[in-house]
Length: 305
Ligand SMILES: Cc1ncc(COP(=O)(O)O)c(C=O)c1O
Image (cartoon, rainbow, N blue to C red; front, side, top):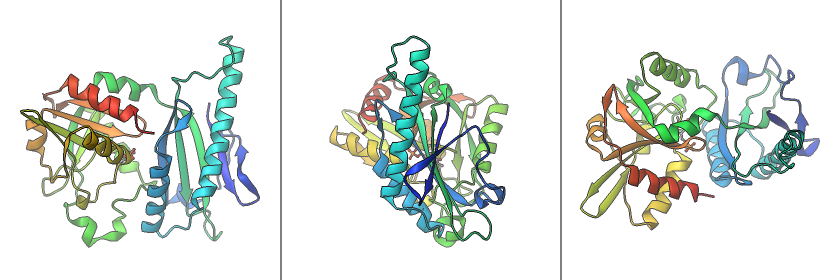
């Protein structure tokens, strides 16, 4: 079940449309060139988590891509309409299956905000929101962890400063390379990927931010690669670092090299929908995991609103 709401100036709350029917122009540059931006947020326990951060990053991606997109209030209205539709649909399904007509509060859904450059020659973009059930695999991987491959992304770690046209740091729709990297991992007995730069720095996963922890006596340090490498500023990492600091963790922002991952007490991939997935092996070699730290960080991530 996917709910679809288009942003449409003639319908201020957003225009509900049928997600199972054709809706997008074949000339839309989001489809023909991957020219657009998006956000994926988690809907859980009755709220869309970190919506402010997602809206801020959407605006930042739009600026980096020279895209004119609707304002935050318009997105909020479309998201609210989509969630109301989704909850209504879930209640109808539950009523039909005799579970009392109340949506399950444990239900997790993915809220996508998408904005493209629109149909060729139209002079306006296309924007929409979808809500669909969160994939079961992500939930599973929070428990089982992920085996990752280190894969070269082919850029050096200073490219973002030299080549702004590469749109490093923007969350664009051009994810074919990220998906190809994940397929490569799955063909090679792994579940996920950590990209490295051509000069040997740890970057990010195809859909996640890399975190590592070190313990020294009573001190716990949480480290993530520096944004200067051109990686996407992760909203989960950003929110988690705030809470971890309040809980007494020391924070560090790279640079990170592959040996740091092997030497760490624990490594995780974090993202908005899958949340926290422990890394259990790198390039076929088991690495250290820490159930206590995983439980602590999972609790902090669950507390992010
Ligand atoms: C390339 C990349 N890095 C990092 C992330 C994690 O970002 P967030 O925590 O905001 O979901 C994502 C999320 O999809 C991503 O695609």
